[in-house]
Amino acid sequence: MNKLVEICASVMIPRGEGFYTACVDNVDYLVVKGRDFSSFDIIVSDSDIAICPQNNKNAKLLRGYIDYLNPVSRKGHPYTIGLGDRLGCAGEGHLKLMKGKKVFPVLAQQSIRELNLTGRTYDDVLSSAMWAVFNEGYTSGFGADGDHLKQPFEIEYAIACGYSMITLDCSEHIDNTIVKLSDNELKAKYEEISPEIREKYEKKYLGECDCGVSFDMRSLMQSVLIYSDAIEYTHEIYERFIKPNDIDFEMSIDETATPTSPENHYFLASELYSRGIECETLAPRFCGEFQKGIDYIGDVLEFEKEYRTHDEIARHFGYRLSVHSGSDKFSVFPIVRENSSCGVHVKTAGTNWLEALRVIAICEPSLLREIYIYAVENLPKAQVYYHIRSNKEDAPSIENISDSELRRLLDADDTRQILHITYGLILNEKKDGEYVFRDRLYDCLKRNRDSYSEGLIKHIGRHLALAFGE
Image (cartoon, rainbow, N blue to C red; front, side, top):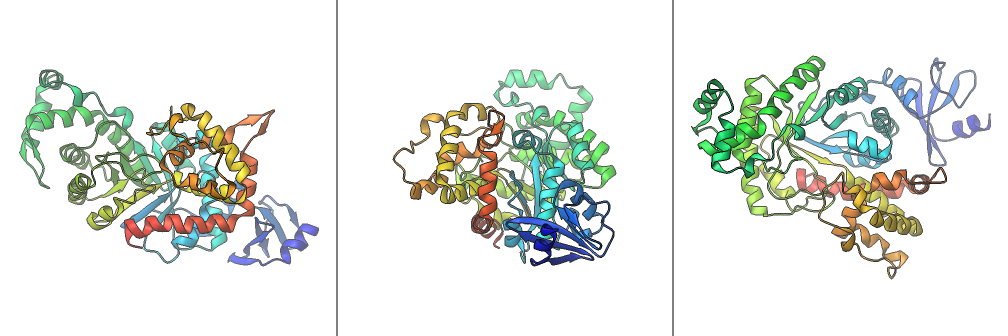
């Protein structure tokens, strides 16, 4: 009974009728007192009290008792932020930051690609978020996003796990070759469409439309040929999964080589609307580059001009814009804040991982050295999954960098990108059947959880200030 005595002697904070959170030696526990706890996983118990691990099974059970532990819709919240947490231990810092803010947090946000690279499941991601909500006593609501899902079975999986939002990635249904076609090639491909459908499109779109958008024949042909398959696929997914389950829906067309012109956006939005597809948010492929973990690359004035038009189109059709790869896009956040007339959703993910590495650099620099050397050496493997501008040749040597200066690696664009995209390799590298980095990384973050929270409050707080005025 030593563990029972030790935890009962700690500060047990009530989080619901008969449910408490307690923390001993940087480990969080669920305490069930004065009610039936037989269905829970239990570490140790006495007649009317049980000490339980904060695991997936207990998370699912607890969600049945306490309503605020279940993810909810973003609807009615004009300003929302996705807080992707690849490690599952950023929730504490996120929620300390979000308390009292007008911005609604989508606290559980992960793509299938991230699940595969981190070795986690959707249950793991939602449970990590829920335990953070429970431990922090955060009762203002949070969302859960099955992010960048492409296949029906992925969507079905996220919904079955209780996710309140689905982001449909349509990149595999967008024809990026169309913009490179000559006039004759474009016309020939367009004429493969039945005359009846072509006539319908031309009558509906040629000339002046709403939102200051005007189609000539070329821009119409391009829009039809680039996005028609994506529209049909979205309609199929919406009717099969989104509408029957009444969950938040985001359409993503950003992970493509084709920037979304105002004409493209208007055509897409109009066709979705005519099919009764209600998006909560839509993510265009903006001009310039939204690369991982660094600021915007491109003409800021051109971005502002196009963003205003995209926002007008979104408002016209009744949804909000979504800014993907939104981590660290500080130069355009003021534009987003000032020109989002009906609200906006901003997605962050990898920047939370980089803040975790900043803690490692400060608290255990030798581990960060090992991680960095490994990341540089294995960068080509990660570039199969992510597009960045940095290469191995851009990585600075750290031989002459002192331990006290290692944290500067997390400030330079090249090293941020390299460390940003190699997370899966770092977490899963094994030697003789044992993880090389994962366990030491988690142990360091557990021992320095306050430092990690403080770093997130500062860094993600900068995102909230610039993008939302919070």
